[in-house]
Image (cartoon, rainbow, N blue to C red):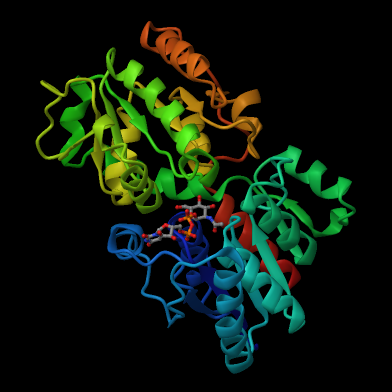
Length: 375
Ligand code: UD1
């Protein structure tokens, strides 16, 4: 029997976490699948890429495109040019993309023009805010895909509303949760478990809307400063955010923080800033946090699964199920609202939630079963 040749695409930090369980599952059926892992190099810093591969034992990429940063068109175009060469050389039967980053879009466009079928994992999410680059990436990728794997029924509805045939849509659950379940015990046992005895807030912030605009960022930092008077904040900061803090001269809100010396005494209400953390360390911090403040997509889902309160510093979310069923509250970017909702949680009035259907660690198995039946 001829093997099905699949190119798996990764580019950014969250992609690595999503591709892992699918690759592991396909590996169990090596007689049927031949896999090629392509890393576009959209994320290239050690902390954003290399340590993540090591942390979750993701195999080294077979092909590294080394694209790096750039304006949207430039980055997307460079990935397309290089990925086209890979597709022509490797002649895959399927290109598998995950999430909604520029690498997802660029590789989908390339594959579609070469008439190679595309599988999109995490299809159908919509924020209905086209000022987010990810929303454009999601819409275009979904419109080009032959297999649309969704995390929730809302996503199925979004796709059908856009005219996508129900035959291509498969509700399989949340792939990030497969990885979280696999590594949760290991993460909980790692060095920082002593954090358990300390109440703290975990923060992530990297959306261009929040960090590229001086006033938007200052507004959020003022809210965080108020919150940190009541509870210490730990902030593993994305390189984009670290850069913007320097550009705007907002270093006064922060103090450098080393997780190995957990010491909030004399923090003087400053935000405790570290470099981006490996997956297991970040997961450990999330598991033990009093609550999480974020503008990330995946973190909204991970906190819902873990039952940890999450306040999302955005005006919209493409993951409304985390609000409808989970622990997430959309607080927007209004300073008072961020402070008030945080104080509610600090005083023990956090939101309860439940785990959505099929966020159960078996999503990769469902996906690969569908490939086995249909390809
Ligand atoms: C990308 C995704 C975003 C995702 C995030 C996850 C797009 C449009 N955005 O955003 O959806 O939530 O990844 O982390 O694809 N930089 C470095 N080192 C790196 C990577 C980035 O210094 O390894 C800095 C550079 O200054 C770069 C900036 O971050 O210009 C932005 O990087 P980019 O890959 O364009 O988007 P992200 O903000 O990382």
